[in-house]
Image (cartoon, rainbow, N blue to C red; front, side, top):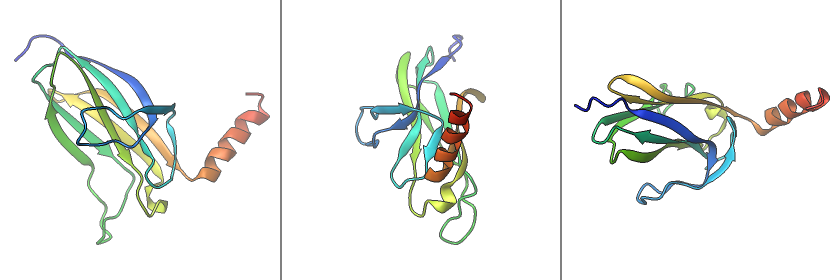
Length: 144
């Protein structure tokens, strides 16, 4: 096992273009935000730059609000593992909103772990479009 301590930096976080799992290209970064409108097919997440961790196991996990499956039971977090491909590697962790959008509203948390330690995490608030307008109006009234 490498004695180097992995360096992980979140480069971009927010809304991205649709991600193609089959492509080696990362999705295009569209908007920096942690407030995600609950719209079908909107892609959100983050791109992390991982250095000094080649061939180490990277565990990713997406904790979503209590989204029920087809049987009405709460879905488990989405997680998986990949090996870091190089000593200077970019990795996209993201998800998309699917129908119905009403049960996707809430806090989504995404994490990356190496050797059992969280090395990157980001939370997003998925909300109905009218909530975003209320937040903007609140700050606008205060001169921002």
